[in-house]
Amino acid sequence: MKSSNMNIKSWRKEDKIGLLVLIIVAGFAAAVVYHYAIGYYLGKPWPANTFLHTPDAHFSDFNLVVRQSAGLDPFANDIGGFAGAPFAQFLGYLFSILQVTWVQLGIFFSSFFVVFILMAKHYLYGVKSVPDSRQLLTIFAITFLTYPVLFAVDRANFDLLACVLLLLFVFTYGNRKYKTSAVFLALAVAIKPLVIILGLIYIFDKRYKDFLLVLFSAAFLTVLSLSLFKDGFFQETRKFLDALFYTTGYLSAGNQQAFSSDLYGLLTVVTQFLGHRLGREIYLPAYPEARLIYAAAAAVIFIYFVVYLWKNRLPLWQVLAVLTILLILLPFYSADYHLTYLFVPMLIYLGLKEPRRNELLIIILFGLLLIPKNYYTIQSFQNIGVVINPLLLAGLLISIIPGAFSPKGISSVFWSGGTRIPAKEQI
Image 1 (cartoon, helix red, strand yellow):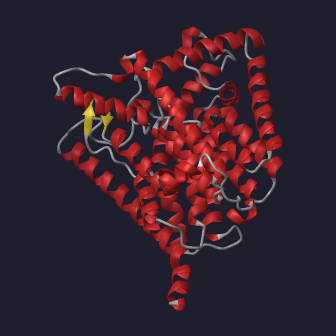
Image 2 (cartoon, one colour):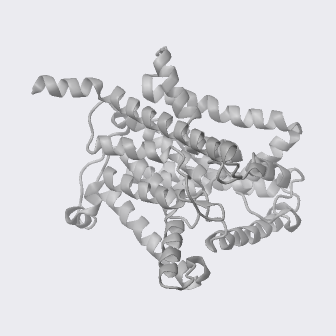
Image 3 (tube, one colour):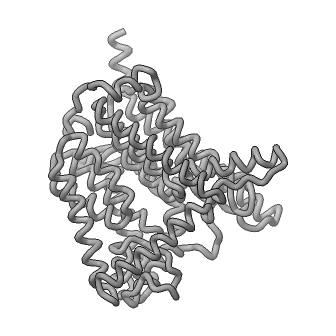
């Protein structure tokens, strides 16, 4: 028995990585063959002939930010009024100075892929190792064949920058370089404010000053960006808030419920389906009361899990996984490029050598979240991934912390828990 346990520990890491890559390659190949056949042989147009967004949307998120920010007036009404974070818009202005589109995109994508590949190599095989051909193929599959990366690259969304900044944040945090980690997280928050949720690990580890450093640094970058825009800090703040309210209302009204992985989109599809069965048209976002109830329920769910993580001290990868799932699952709208955030806890998890609870299920769920799933269109360009991804995320959450769904786990929210594992020992 002892020999058997040692064998499990010796091959478990490679087994996890191999299973994940198998799912990624099989899922990618199946999607490519299916959509090619549908488009080429059956002659069906988009969205049937691809698992990506509409063809005229290639690099559109990046181009929109650059176009809006080129004149240092990103929140003007005549250029869309769609609000990106001020610091992200300022980065868009810096890219616009380069003028040549292929140079802009080259720098943008290189910033992501170089860091992402290095981080993947570090967690999977060690930073000083020389990967063999099999390991190179593994890194290639995780980097270039996964749906979240392909979708984010297709849109050239700034989530790519946020993703690598989060990887650098966790890397430095795990090596106890807390001030450096705070800088990386602050940059990520300034680009995508919702990722501040991951900063709760400072609170859980009682590193309150580092958390405040993140907040102040992100706020400074935001204020600086607003101050550098055309009409100065106060006027640009007003314009930004107007654009932000418009954007929030637009998204919560369900106007972007496609290529998304949030619980709100799932509930919208379910209520529509039930309404049709009852002979009624029920569109959840059309009811302000329903939106308020969802927001309140999402807040309660989030608070519950935060308290659970505080009371039950868990390894870093588990804490990050739970917070990342909540970050994707609970907002009114989470586009599929938000799934790139899953690489942060996933790479740490793949690097662990010791067997973990529900290991096979966790790897399968991670793998399924990384492959295309839009084989069936529900309506317009809304595909079945809107239903499948939230369910997979919920299943992954249960698999990672099953105790949170048990009576004992629920009671632990109201009673003291264990002791957190030191950061250096978690990775």
